[in-house]
Image (tube, rainbow, N blue to C red; front, side, top):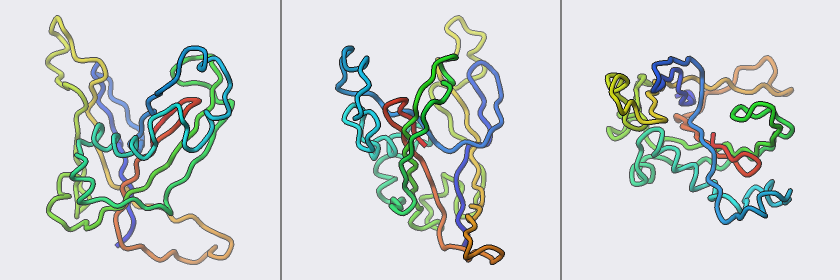
Length: 201
């Protein structure tokens, strides 16, 4: 088989907008154990891979699969295995903030890769395997009809269309011009981020 990565290719937002973009499951890590005084200091610990001020990235990477894809912890334990060779931690500094225009920030990013133990198992059909079919998930109480109600849709509701895409092998000097050998299993990556702006991929 050939490695594939899971992306959300389209998002239907609670306000009726439709966004087409290729996005892996991601979210920001939750801040923990920090008071207002600490938040105003430029503590080097903010940039550590295991930051003491956020939830553990390993926990965050599992939480995102449950929150975005509805995959319970028990399901993840049964069907997924973390690929340690596919994990990496990077820092992107002096970036313009998407959420706060004009604010310069830093992003500490964990990219976490999970592999499906057995893509042919009946239990993984809910994520479109083994055929790699597209599937949809809803976050929050997603209902277009409620937009006209007095209460409106719950803030943050979103419908995601997920698709499996083939992984493009990275070329190296030694392998330039040569065909990469296909690997044997499907890939399901989520990720997490950290302090300066904790995020999950």
